[in-house]
Amino acid sequence: MTAIVVPIAAISIEHLARKVAQAHAGGADLVELRLDTSLVQVGSLEALYPLLNTLRQLPLPVLVTLRHRSEGGTWDGPTSERQRLYAHADRNGAAYIDQELATDDGWRPTHAKLVLSHHNFASMSPDLDGIIQRMHAAGADVAKIAVMPHDAADLADIARCYRHAKGAVCAIAMGEIGLPSRLLAGCWNAAFTFARLDGDEGSAPGQPTVRELSDRYRLHQQNADTRIFGVIGNPIHHSLSPHIHNAAIDEQNINAVYVPFLVHDPVAFWKACGKFIDGLSITIPHKHDLIPLMNRCEPLVTRIGAMNTIWRDADGNTVGANTDAVAAMACLEEETGSLTGKKAILLGAGGVARAIAFALADRGAKVCIVNRSHDRADALAKEMGGSVADANQAHQQPFDIIINGTSVGMEAPTNSPWPADRHHRNSVVFDTVYTPLETRLIKDAQLAEARTVSGLSMFIGQAAEQYQRFFGLAAPTDVMHRVALERLEAKAKAKKSVMSRDTVDVEREIGGG
Ligand code: NAP
Image (cartoon, rainbow, N blue to C red):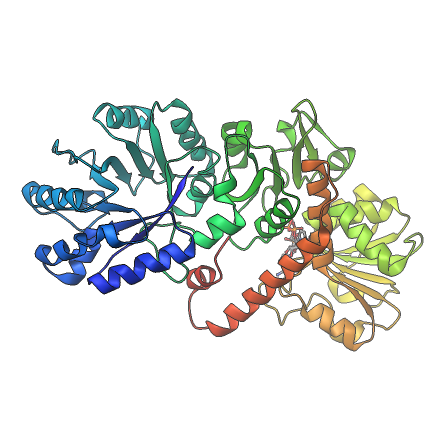
């Protein structure tokens, strides 16, 4: 089983005991005692020996590492000093000892297992298979590589390392792009995956928390049969999809996992990684690129020209789908009843607006499109048989429904795409934006006593349609809804309490993903 390893630095015996106890309580299987980082804090090599004397009393096995400066650590002392320290760790109960392949001096532990490692913080190293082979040939019980991917297509190289290796491997792609290599470690039978404790910074870019790995991604339940799903987009760290899909998968006890892929080039990604992926959600800005690569598409995708889902049929063929349209219509119809003959003002002409425009036209609604870029509005209106209006004239027309299909209200929550004094009480206002949960548009509409439809209902609806295609099962939408609300509330709370900190810190505090 893949072990979750928490790296720690310790400045005293008590500190070490406390950190290991925290890691144990947090669900870690192993701790990595980073002697190099500890050394920076305690100041002398001699002060590290008493820490190593306590290894057998700790509640978790320990991987002992004195990471060299040339591989991202802080140690650059003589080999003889490292050997003396490592021999002491070996005699006193270290479970593993880590030695970089590049600085390997031939010293070997007598009792502990040997990890040979390779780190590259700048790029993917060439010939990863060859590096791993050399590590195993040199006696490594575990071959560890940690490299920096350029794009998500590089994850295919990590997956291949596991397939080709003849011994135990821990292969990590670092940073946000590489995150799936950590989250899928159990599917690929990794020896270890590294994680940080809640509130800790971690020892390398992109480390998830132990809780995320064990609870959200169910690392200990993953195995070679676990089906791999995910969401691609750029950016992706804000996505709620991993939270709600994994919660639903857990609820229905399905052997699957759903991870976020930060992707710059979706075509390169799908060509490299599509083989090991069972299904995908697709978000901004990639809803168009993969359509030509599908074995077939559901008819709506071809008409709309946007695809937010890839699933596989019984023969393993890839099928493109658009679940935004059907979800949006279900939400609207719940509030409006039949849409036939209803006058709808649709703000936006991007991916979501296109899906909604065609679906409204199919149901007999009269659609007027208002968009910042007129040419896009014109083109869409021509395709689906609607009309177009300027933003400053649209509110003069009679309407039953206003739909916001733009991103206005998301980045700046005080902004609204529609004037506050142009709502009326007999209308229905549907905002596809759901972060924040109550947008300015929704608040204005409620003040005017209009009926409102939240973007969150559409988001859950489109995810449920995807889930049904992925697993052939009705999604537990109550679970999805509860988890989404919890995340959005936690996000809003974290944002409020750390207003002065930068975005990266905010994401860290709320767990990212
Ligand atoms: P998209 O294809 O990039 O389209 C963005 C739309 O917003 C375009 O019409 C764009 O106008 C307009 N826009 C962007 N910034 C604007 C500004 N400052 N002022 C006026 N108009 C502006 O994105 P999309 O995929 O359609 O997504 C749009 C929004 O829908 C997202 O922000 C998201 O919140 C929401 N959404 C919700 C769900 C859900 O399930 N609830 C699902 C997907 C998306 P131009 O054509 O002039 O650029």
